[in-house]
Image (cartoon, rainbow, N blue to C red):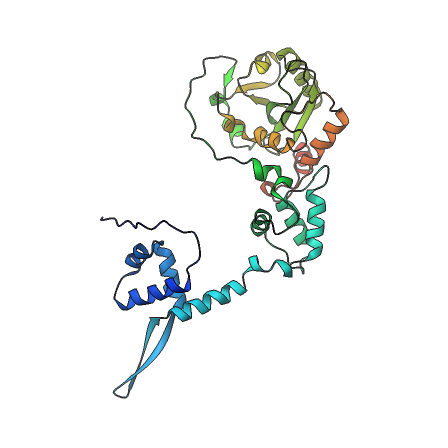
Length: 340
């Protein structure tokens, strides 16, 4: 199939009135939508939708016989476009509930935040169905455009998301225990309760610095965490033993760090090790640690952190409604799974 290429750079913007005039002229010349798209440097779908938008039915009287036919008019397309823009929710910022924005700001800027933008929108909509509020996607557009008091910096995830790099296929030269490839499907598909992922959250990377160990349950995303004086393998094992005595843990999936090298010595729990440079294999824990970073930023010493403060931060995340769980909290689902 022959390919056509335009020398014009693609523009992700709405069609202008002059472009609509060009479309009208090209159609009268008998050109097809694909050719018009090439000439204007637009996607063929954009031209097709515009032709449909601006096409009107006309009546022609010829030799006393009336016939109907359809034709495209640039003025008609422009008029429909302008009418649609007037009805656009994105332009209705001043019509949205002011109370919504006031409460949203308080929720997002709270010292210990329990809501994400999405969960706040969902909860507010359920409590105030009669009020006009923007969707989550539109609200993020408002924030990015600087149209509301909340800034991207108030949402750590919004400014920290990076493009994924291509995954590398590497061979694990270390043999710490069972490979994640041996992990049963009931753990992989999260159909069985009680399986966790483990990792450490570091502050300053200097000697004598405390760390936070997190254990996240794969099915409910409920997390346990504790502050440790160091990241030695012996310290990690002792902390996990204490948690095992109080919580149902059937298996633990870890990375290949030396701090987890002795986990296989633990009894009554299966230990699996992910491939090196494959953090996505422990995505549940990685995501939780990303949320915890809002309270424990990188480069800040964790030595002054108290157990009470850490418990408060963990509870804030465990009690946060999650779209993943149809806006139920991890704490609620964890309690439900324990009684099942």
